[in-house]
Length: 163
Image 1 (tube, rainbow, N blue to C red):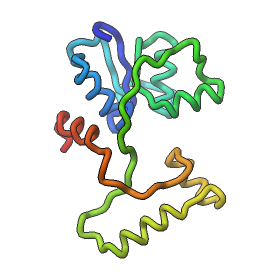
Image 2: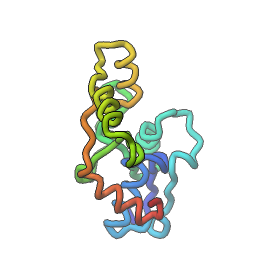
Image 3: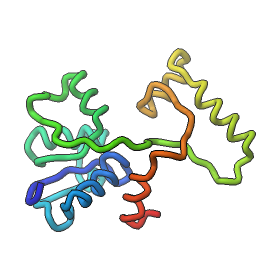
């Protein structure tokens, strides 16, 4: 990717922003020095409301040589016909990591924490409100929280001075 143009999602996106930037650095590419151009969705004018769809569209039309998106977005775009699979290729995938969580202060009453977790776990798409919540989070169900799997995100956030 050296001397190529790279499109990131939003800066606040774990997969299309923070981790993508970090993985480039880990592979020996300094996005600030080694890329011919790069930009985050936040810095581009776009009629597309989805940062990752914007990345795919710009790579597909040749404005950028490569970009960072989730597999889920690629699959959704292929399914809805907005992505020509022959026009792009996946050349690298990240290792797995925990993604998306709801957090609280450490002194939250454990009983209340258990009630909140139970409420999330009870959300289903069989209920119109539950369906709306799940669609808003772009998922099909919630799972119990975990303290493992966050190491990649923590490392990237520390390297960028975010924590």
